[in-house]
Length: 388
Image 1 (tube, one colour):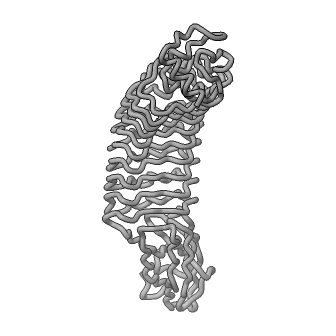
Image 2 (cartoon, one colour; image 1 turned 90 degrees about the vertical axis):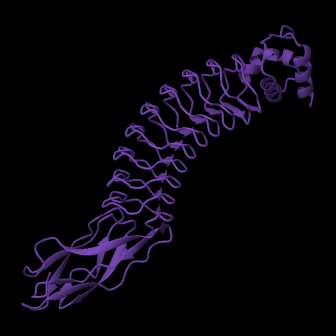
Image 3 (cartoon, one colour; image 1 turned 90 degrees about the horizontal axis):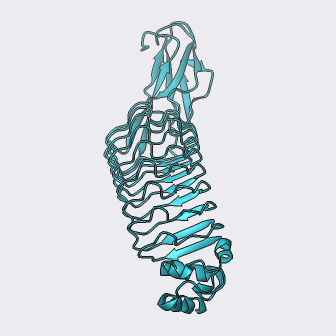
């Protein structure tokens, strides 16, 4: 209460030139003044010293209608800065000048429509940048230049209609990116290039109707991708094929009528898949037996495997029934992310006799895999006159 009284008194008549080591705190935006007084424990703005400012480690600024250059001057030790729930529509380009130790910067829930191109210059230690829930409709291509230590970037809840292809260049340490709930209708093919450490990518609730073939190329650390509530009508074959660490893929609530061959190929770590609430859901995934060594009518033994053209969304074990012969395995196996299963050998019981390979039962689809149904493979007849 004393801090607030001192701040109000200063705003009313403080000239900023009295007290020990004056640093102009009384001339700063009122919401910044109040935050400084609260955090420093100094009752009056004219009493705040340069040492007081330098000692500040964190500063939350609430509901500021505007900010001016110099509001954060002298806060050389500041590591966390939050500018929350204001009506800001722009920022001075030099607002963060001198904050070389800043680690976390939150400028979310304001009304910002754009950023000056060099506003984040000099923030080389920044790790977490939150610009969510503003009114941003575009971003300068070099906005994040120099932020080589950034690990978390949040752009959710804006009005972004496009992203420059090089907007994320140089962010090699980035692990979390949120661009959900914007107005993106397309993405440049190389927009995520170089983000090899990215783990979480949130692209849901946009207007995407297609994806570039190589959009996720090189993102081998990616574990979660959300694409739900877009307008996707198709997926490129193999678009996710390099995502060997991906555990969760959400593509529900789109406009997909079918799935291309190979769409799940390479997703060897997949645990959660959402394809429901699409026009083609539940998508029929048809298992097939395939002979790999010769035609079905060729002599015994035969090398056979289970195949699934889109790729397996989970590890499949299909118990086998062999009529008129025997198999080297009791079950056909197909691993997550694979199109082709392990090869097993089928041997006929006696020369001239056909041998039938059947699926004795079908795997149960895990609860975390939604929007598909599995169709049993047709019986395979080998060797005899009924083969083929």
